[in-house]
Length: 506
Ligand code: BES
Ligand code: ZN
Ligand code: ZN
Image 1 (cartoon, rainbow, N blue to C red):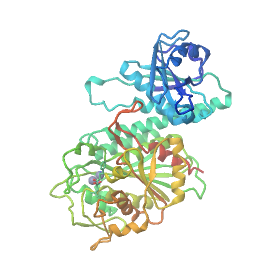
Image 2: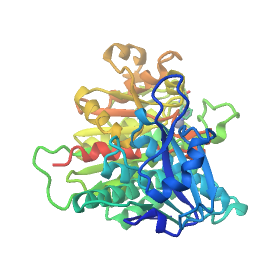
Image 3: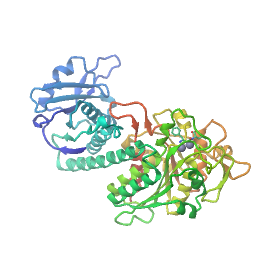
Image 4: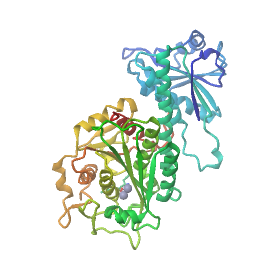
């Protein structure tokens, strides 16, 4: 999909579908809806006047109204998209609104559409431009690449029209728009990886696609085999992969800024869980929904997507990313409950459940990222079913050992528009993972607080390094289609991680 930002009057722009946003300006609780267009030109206001006052369109978020052959406009159709209450308007509604327009056009065979840039005091120009591009791109993604009857469904061109702007705001909007394209495309890149089935996206294939992305965008990349994993003494990662006939991949990406950052700038480490299929291993999962475990590499995909964005946004900060990718399979050679293994850090781990494999590969990934120089760490992982039990499917879990790092991460959320909720990860939980025969065990032994005990396990491997763990098991795959987003992989965390990395730029 091509996205453009043009400075042109929407009334004279020829388009199969012109989208304008509307809000409900009613303020009182029992007041009837009072829809109003955002930033209308005279011609637009005229074309829509009758419909806006008819009472059949209330401008709720995601609501649409289609007018054919609107009078006074060059567009063949006018689509009015509701963004909800005027009082609650923010760029997040604009992101969704742009998505609604794209997902309205897609099934109707329209391959081109235009969107009028919304004007409101709650909508800063640059960020609004960014969210329009993000929303349109993210909405264009569908999980139908293996359906022969659904070829070429993508939108060809989305043109955002802005009527007037001074030179400064014009440049700001163009920068924001370009950033939105990078972020939206990188999020979709991650979603494409997550959507791939386990037979196609093996660890080897994930390595190949990551290396191809890195060479396209000028990142350094190494994909290591089992030999290196054993040489590094990554005993936890090696234990998880040993039951699979698919070779594992230890993927290392590096972003080096053009000019050296200031001496006190941290080196950021991004670590991803890349289990391309999780059967549970010897502690095998039930058959129901096991197919979903192809998305157990969504944490890895988030990091790869973020690196793709970072490579293009070029912040002045060094970034190293470690992705530990393998399958978790039952086999005669598979690791077993009761086994004791030694992680790269030297800590011994008693295996209680081979289905708690994500924390094992991450233990070695987090340790290695520090060896490679990372002084701030973030990892993302579809780590526990328990995080969905705790938080539902709306917020991803955030765990950390450092308040300042959390603050730096959450400061970016109003821009990224993603939802994370901080969960406890304090030392009083450590008791739950204490083992009688090794340093720690790989589960908390009880269902209670399962997401926290998993986080406590990871914490054992980060030492004093400020660290954030994002448990995205409940949010990386969406079963419900939204008016602005298809079901399937969400691409969660790409935008927030990128924003967080940028916040360290010197
Ligand atoms: N990959 C799963 C977690 C998961 C569950 C991801 C649901 C996405 C959706 C993880 O490896 C796992 O199986 N965790 C176990 C841990 C338990 C054995 C302590 C879980 O959550 O049940
Ligand atoms: Zn598992
Ligand atoms: Zn898993």
